[in-house]
Image (cartoon, rainbow over the protein chains, first blue to last red):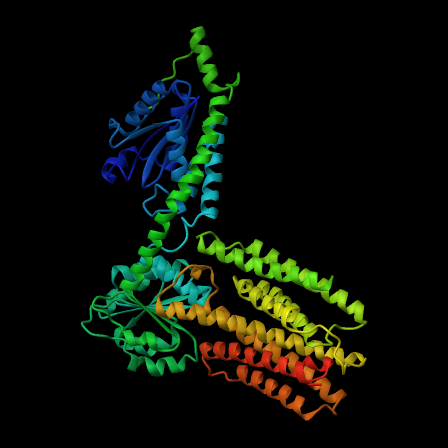
Length: 365
Length: 265
């Protein structure tokens, strides 16, 4: 039995090229059934995410399976897939290694991200529901999930934040612990500050105030995030209430100074204040960081931490590869030794073909 | 037999933190279970030693400085399990293990384990008082550990040099809370310990009362100083523990065996 993978990803093609091949969840079951109905395909799983579309198949004849997969992709999208670029065709250990890399986040846009594991699990669940898998792909995907778990626990590939938003969240959690009791304020409705605020909200920040020179813009952003809009002139009065301040105004000078913060910090009785200054030029005087209980991070320091996090992850790739290699060898060895059972779909097709009684099954379009 | 148990305990208490640091340095996940198991094994050996010694001498093993240091180490480990579990303070064991190991090594290598020459059989309340005061020391010790952790994490947050293990450390808010609560717990235990000694045995030497009373005042002032910042509290709790251990050793050197518990009798 052969394991084959036909795919296209963000690494090889733009979204315009990828999108015709994407398979919506609503039609996934039907597509799987169509794929499985093709003569050359014994087992099939389709992984379709925003970053990749991949067809995994187990087949007796690799060449015939390639042709079937290409025909299926063309029939589904109305566009002929171009191999080897942007589409890639992988076989046996290359296909197995590729799947293990995908589930471990090594092929992801954000190296080491774990969302892909959930997406592949979902894809596999859909295939088992549609009964398009048997022992070869079952074993392959179950092994892949174990590999992903092992890689996550035995290496640092998923550890440490790698974006400004996630750095802000991690730092906030190292200061306050659970964020459920924290109140945040956004000064200036910029894109990065909004993303950062959303990241904090997703981790349970209790409430959020939005202040902007244009009140209407603050109100619109507050409504979008489920927060409260306040007038820019009033924001200083609210400082004692908040725990996290995200600032990204277009002011040409400091709007949060040490002098202004002295009475505010005194009112906090040691309660920490996390200040995130995303503005260029900076909104917050650097001397604020010297105040007891105040933790100031500007855009450069956040980006440096994110970059270091990514560098740390990149260093882990070699260790991940070593872990994967062992599993690839084991699986391919098992694949080579595994006998074909009499009831297996591949065998049935083969027998039907040999006996000349096989019914012709047309691939769906 | 007793000393072997203590060496085994020390080994386990050092092994857990050493493995944790090695894991974190290698970029691997914090081995929570491994660390906790090693410290639990250390605690088990400590307990076995105390039972063994207690049976040997016929009462609570607090008759000389050696035993007091071991009992203190045991109490700190006990508090660690209660606090570490209750507040989910990760890495507390990594900081606690070496401290307890240091106390045990000091006892094993630098303190003579001989019955105190002035030690005499005493009533049960004396043991009760001494045990309570040692438990108070243990709470203060762990508060000191939480204080050191707070200062380390706070320094990294301020300087933005996060380094290995930063994301595994508890939040500074949790550390400040634990620090304060442990000081309160220690202060209450010490108050009860000293009050029982005062009520039941008022003819204790003035020198010892001054030590015990000063220590009690010092720790009572810490949590009462509500306006102090968590940083200052952390710094003072770490410093206060060093002072109190020094006091304990001095009283152990000059006082009677059973009196060392709270520097009171």
